[in-house]
Length: 244
Image (cartoon, rainbow, N blue to C red):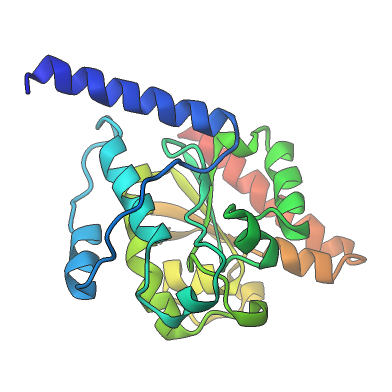
């Protein structure tokens, strides 16, 4: 295949991806044979070195990753899911939000943050001057834990290569971690959210702002101080994005 034809095909694929993003939908994927070698897949997912920021988006690699997430059987969570939830938004964005795991509504729809917590996150994103389709939203764990319980360490470990690969391909300028599970994974810390929120950490050279999960705000709906703290965190993110 000639180089010109390869470039044309990649451009067509990128145009399709942008179209699906504008619709606010997930990516259309085809069925794929189930992976049988977990170790080999994990190495393949995280093995690519980060290239300069000017690199072209690797659309084919992205679609391959989404297929693997949707077809994943690496941990027992797949047995109780309706569908896996890879993530949603602009996969060439400068701002990425990472939560804990899908809930009931997310499991039904195959989209992240679509329940009450998701509606609140959408309002936060819009208050920052973005739309949902401008950013990328995902979770550490891609399948719903039973009764929305906290993901176990073994589940986080099994699913982590997918998130690592997403971060690598998107290469955002800033990550916002939502809640304790995401902060612990990205920042490798056992400190409480009260201690770490509002202070930038770092994940492989990318600034990470840990803040409270939107579900925590809903559980403490009458506490205006928590809402104020989250907004202060987002203002720091906006300031960093403006200066970068």
